[in-house]
Length: 242
Image 1 (tube, rainbow, N blue to C red):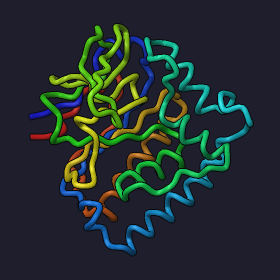
Image 2: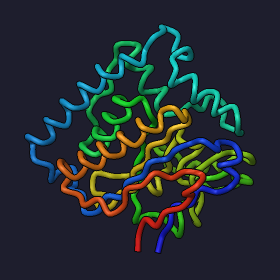
Image 3: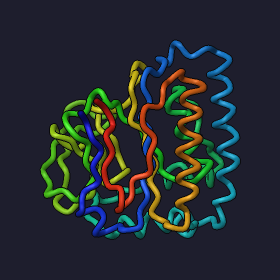
Image 4: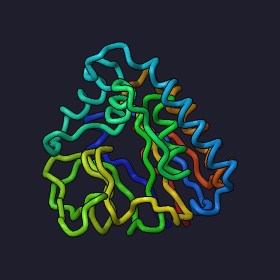
């Protein structure tokens, strides 16, 4: 049995955070997604780039409310220099007129949801987890190979919020950068999908985003959603695999 556990050290920093999760089993490989469906997913992503414009109220990226909220959150824990929440990077592209483009069907789906709701969305290969997945403040030194790197280990810092399992870090600085070991690939079949919200007034948006993400993964990737839940301080852990 594998669990997703959000530790007390996290809730001490972010008592009102809401984390939406979905576990998808039996996803199609990228090559198995029919062309018509892949094109529909790309259109969803195109629309989401336009929908994200409603969150852009200033030409200064840090003054836009979703970005401001996450920058404030990042000041509450130790981070790598220059680390930013994933949604800031997506909204910055929208602001600069450089829409987020298609990568693979699974990534396109969660980028579309992230843009539409201006919430960070991520995905990991659940089969790659060693033991439970945990979110909390680490003492540092958790091994981590950043996505896109081939050899350089970049361990966590003391006081950093990160996702980690028994083998090391899974995602650094909360939702800044994924690691190679657990990253979704074109062949991944079983995924742990996650949406994070630090603004308590947007909890309903997080709920809606998880529901829509699950529906799209079922519809276009042929997956079965085995788990769908909102993790809060009152409900801090969920079983994610047998």
